[in-house]
Length: 362
Image (cartoon, rainbow, N blue to C red):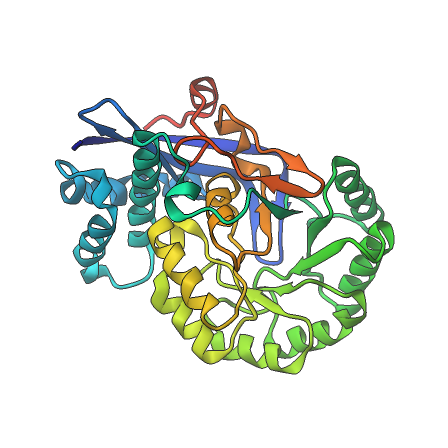
């Protein structure tokens, strides 16, 4: 089997209501969808995304810049191809947009190989379970009032979720704590609750907030300070008892090695497009496992489920509904767990009608 070409298409999925976090205002999720073609007619699919449609041409260009490294090659050699692409982008450094291009191709190659052998990626990696605890991450935004937060949290409970994440980012500790208290009151003491500051706080504010959060028994306190401030995140982690989660804005295994060495997080959160795809995600998860550090994938719910089924130190899957409209298949929730699809490749395939609906002209 040989790779014969790469095809991309841009889409923009608007939100019904714009999302506001401590540092973001987001009106839509924008994606470049990738198809890797082969001479045997089997197609692998991958996806990368951003928050601004103006950046879609950049994502598209970096993917196609790697075309000479993969066309004509056997997709089964994805480990070697990852290394070749990594070497090819060396001039641009070990972080940044180059990893997005590698990630899109790597995801598609794993998907392709799974389809070629009629096996899920989870089985290719070595399956250890068929379900994973899910936390709903598609709401409880900073813009909601305490009453609105309580209503939405109760709705997630009615859908069957036993864990959920809310956002922090008000100007005062008191106001954020009132919101956390409202959600905890609505869901009770036995439902898992996470809180995400989206990099919005100074180190001192983050520490004060973390101490005030202790009575609410959070699973984790996410990205309290700027992602690049590993020393600051380590200070916060050392000063409070609630675990710090971070890593969605980190790149490749070397970035996560730095996080581990500095003690900047208790839970690592690799994002498939920034970490460099499935190949590099697995390396990061195994490295974390050597230090007994749990891992939780960021955003890529559909693709990450295959990783959740194979990697024992993944404790939670983020249920983010942003990309769901793009697929023919839907995720399945049972007793608060997402089921790991036993379908070839990554288990989710692009829906042609949805892509046409959300298409962004080039």
